[in-house]
Length: 246
Image (cartoon, rainbow, N blue to C red; front, side):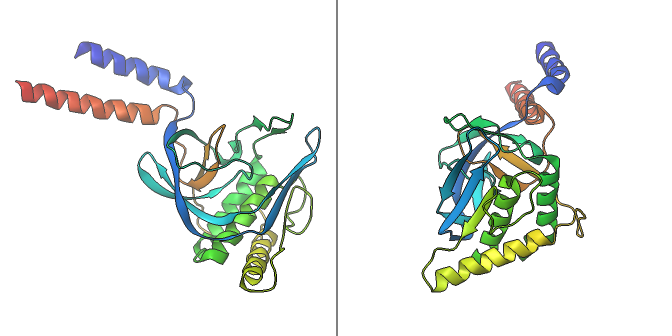
């Protein structure tokens, strides 16, 4: 008993110096969204400049975090999601996405505080409007624009400065849906003024060196909080076991 108590005390002292909390995450499914014909990410700030194209689903996603379902949106256009259970770190939104190299000598750095605050404003004022595939796609497009637009540039989904989208669908329902998503996203971006005109919502990011980074609702646990919680549960179980043995 004495040894266990000393171990818990030592961990409590060491917790402030620990790294960001790590959780197990795996992608489950697309909750709601539509396919994008073509969205583009270009970094003129890297050396050399480069671009990437993405044609896939834009929308809201379901991930399993330590066994609990959470709805999230993607942050990083170039990383793929995985259905395997892999470790992610929980970080403050402005610290995402994780810095990494694309193997071509190009480094991607986390967004700054302004971009993070713009996402918080977008979320607080418009998440309640996300009710179907088109609105979910619009919200995802707006997040991509904020994260990947060149710092200091205006948010414009039609321009080729940082992030932009083009509707290459043939005339029909898909083209109409994507146009509606683009127009809605641009309207939300145009309304960002630095003032949150709704109840603020805590947001956090899930980051990985190898897989898609996500943004979702929730606070960032203090370093080591998840570990101490687990140790506390184990300690209570050990005490109960001891009592049952008597």
